[in-house]
Length: 120
Image 1: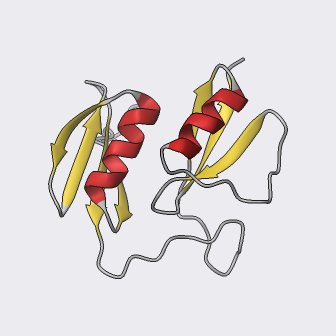
Image 2: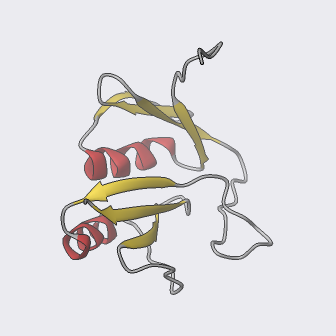
Image 3: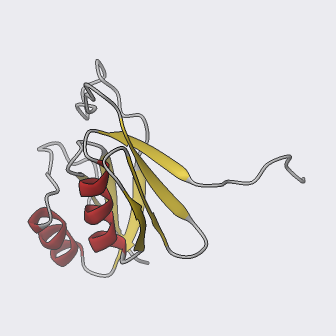
């Protein structure tokens, strides 16, 4: 089936676009292609993730269903422990609730949950 659109990019709301771009630049190794107070972007040359400032931004409180997550990224890693340590050094948090053994849920500096998953 042929769609009528193609994905331009994924945009994430946050309070600090430049800071979140730096975080994901470190995690993914993608180039920061734009960085201002209101908006920042990273790209690997084919796919982009944008970060837009939202006044009074409130992050999801995963896994609290009263403030559900709005999205999450799944990222493959070779070593869960090493990747978790690096992400946490760069500002990620780790919720107490962890639903799996072959992946870990972390939160980026803006509070968005993301998963690091053991590469198969």
